[in-house]
Image (cartoon, rainbow, N blue to C red):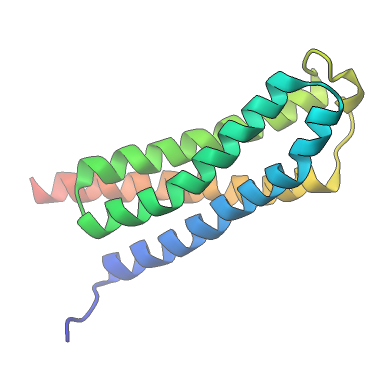
Length: 143
């Protein structure tokens, strides 16, 4: 039986945490998307659909890239995950501070579902940046 190295164990833990965070992001947006349709804010509903689809697609994509251990693929997937989390955070904060068209009533409304989504996105962003650093360090070391 093969023993896992610290790097492999760290990657497995990161995959577990990232999978939970991505699933949590999806759940929060699935729960909230109906309100966007009800308010006829279709562009935002479309953005929610993209967020949900990407969050769910990134779970198996991250797992596959970590299993294959191709440094470039790992770097791309962790960067994409960081970008998704960051864009979602920025979108939520923007909608609650500056506001988006047709959504003036959201300014100042820091609802529990949005905060819950931030609780998934913030750690996911941090984790993705840590993994990007680790992948870059590993690439330099192996050269």
